[in-house]
Length: 78
Image (cartoon, rainbow, N blue to C red; front, side, top):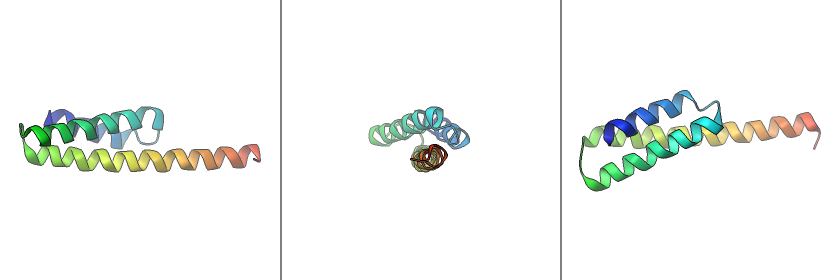
């Protein structure tokens, strides 16, 4: 599970510019790393790296969504 969380965390960082794709990937990576740490199975360092990358990916996705909403509201003059 640690390898999957690390892989999903890295993929979430690559796809943060598209929140509809990046947010679920980062979220699942974050959840998997938390489960892996709680179970104590797998490599702890990989789980922590997946946790950090998932959190950073989630934050970047939220910022990207906010910027998209601001740009759209400016475009539509709302």
